[in-house]
Image (cartoon, rainbow, N blue to C red; front, side, top):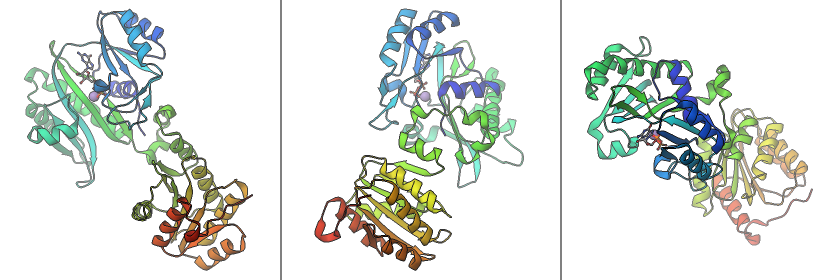
Length: 399
Ligand code: GDP
Ligand code: MN
């Protein structure tokens, strides 16, 4: 789960990371009022969306008066902001953060990530801040400083001093940098984060070290033990299809095609999507019902996929190891009886209780197109989608 910049800054502040003074606003009037409250004569207005690249997309504006703040915010509020991280549909701006502007001397990149190869938290830093890390690694790979944290002892101060030295932090600021790095690391560990990114971390001309931007991502599987983090969720920033699925305990990734996929396991989902593409189609989503899915869960998955108006055919592909084909078949039958389905449904079952599953489908009297291999299933769903009656014997379900 992602959170907003202002939320990440609040968390990091509690761990001793310095940030510029700032305040959140939900309207242009409130933004101008907040700026007056903060004081000073220069502010930065920042659109709060769950994506980076706002600076280049016009979502970060320096303003010199409250009327300028007001007019900047009138442009921002309600707009769908498209950055290189949002996808073409963009993300809605419903909150802005107003910050006192700071005199930047140097911009540094700082990130904490989970490195799966070393199975450690890894610190990635570069003196070339202000650029995205992808750009830095393509253009200035030698500038990147890395350090891994031994979990038994945690991040050591000497490692922080080494990083500060390699980044060329002024000696008078070394201790400050150590505190910043330690703060980020503790915030990362104590909240089960998977990423903390500060880009840029700045050294100001009056020699302070401040986090000017902050992003945090959390491990969804650990959210149950961090209720205060779960509360920061902002559904306005999520794909509505994915939020609906998450609320129902299903994992769903929305895509742009028109064949809905109900699959068990991420690996099989990948293979299914590849096969659909090979057969000339485009998947509309990736829905993983997981292991041990009950008929009710399968029915829920079905309803979810069908609620997406892009879906013009559904492919159910189950390899039942922990799952049971008969339960999946029952779920399909249940869903088709409850929901008005006017798109073709192709089902391929393999594994535990496959014969019972096939029997349930055959005896249901419902127009389910059955397939025995994945390739066949993909071809039939693509064929059905293209409305190729002779190939698939397409029928419409009437409930
Ligand atoms: P992002 O583009 O979504 O990563 O948004 P950032 O918060 O990183 O802002 C983009 C850029 O705006 C930063 O790299 C800074 O150069 C600039 N910026 C942000 N805050 C300030 C500020 O307080 N003062 C000044 N002068 N520039 C700022
Ligand atoms: Mn940034």
